[in-house]
Amino acid sequence: MATVAVVETPSGKDAIAEGLFELLKPAVQQLDLHVHSVRESQVELREHIDNLATELCRINEHQKVALDLDPYVKKLLNARRRVVLVNNILQNAQERLRRLNHNVAKETARRKTMLETSGAFATRSPSKP
Image (cartoon, rainbow, N blue to C red; front, side, top):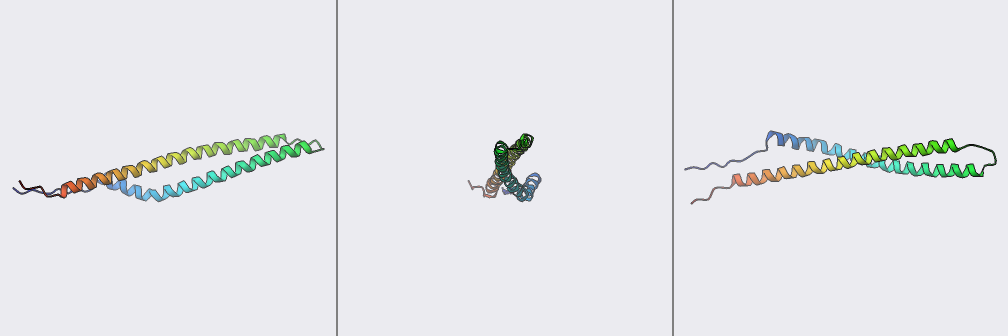
């Protein structure tokens, strides 16, 4: 009785998923770098806003002329609050992107391993009794 070795090839879905992953991976990595850069810029901007607000308060205290800088300080603090809010949103998006990238890579590795092991079992010749 003749035996036939069955060699499994990746299914169409697996091939498409692998292709999409490889296609999107550079874009995701580039996006992650840009988000990181924006977050660093926002931290720097927040520090500048804090310094400027402190300086305006100091100037206001030492001015002999009654110059009301409080509205400007409030505007700066409001801008700082918005920068912090946007930074938090970016941080959450970056974390979700990192988790997604990790899960896709893990799933791709799992499928490759599964295909390699099923291919190894299928290509083995059966032992003769």
